[in-house]
Image (cartoon, rainbow, N blue to C red; front, top):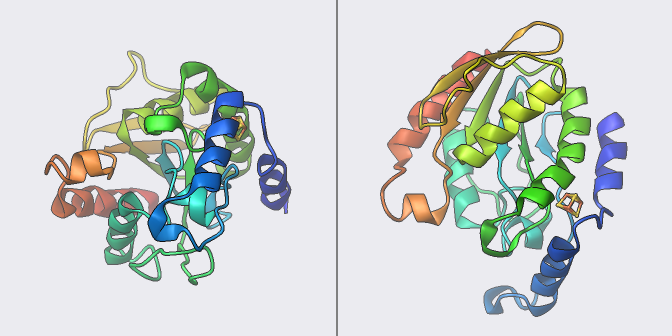
Length: 231
Ligand code: SF4
C-alpha cells in the first residue's frame, strides 16, 4: 500500500522543468511507428515484486520506451534485451515486454530507475539526478529490508545505488568500489544485513550494437545476481 501511494505521488511530479518539457514534448510529437498510440509522458514508477530480493537499478526511462508505455524497460530495445535475460534466468514470466498490460511479471525482483523521467539524449543533469533522489530514497526505504542483491546497470545505476544506500544509513566500503561489468561490492543495509551490488553494462543500443555487451555476458551477470539474491 505504501508503494501504491508513492507511485501515485511520483506520477504527478513536475520538479525538473527540463525533463517535464522533454517527456511531454516527446509524448506530443511521438515517433511515427507509434503515432496511433497514447504516450504515458509522465514519471515512471518502479515495476515488479513489492517485496523484492533482487533490485534492478536503471538510469532513466527511454523517450519512446517507458515514456510511451508507462512501464520501465517496456517497448524498447534495451528492455527487450533485459526481459529476455530475466526470462532466461527464470525471473520474468515472459521474454516479451511490449506494453503495460501484457501480463509481464517479475518473481522476487523489482526494477527501479535513478531518474524517473525520460531525459534528452538519455542524460539527466546532476541537478536532475539529485532532485529525483528523493523518490529513490522513499522507495528504497520500503524495499531495503527485503533486498539482498542489486543488479546495477551502468556506472550511473552503480553510483546511484551506492549513494542511496549511504544516504539511507547503510554502509559502503571505502574507497568507493568502482563500476565494471561483473564487479561486486558488498554493502550493508541500515539494519546491518549484507547487500551485494553487481555491476552490469547497460543494455542500451550503444553497448549491444557494438558488442560491448553480449547476451552471454548479460546472462552471466543475471545468473549471478539471481543467485546472490537467493532467488
Ligand atoms: Fe520528478 Fe524525478 Fe521526474 Fe524530476 S525526474 S520531474 S524529480 S519524477
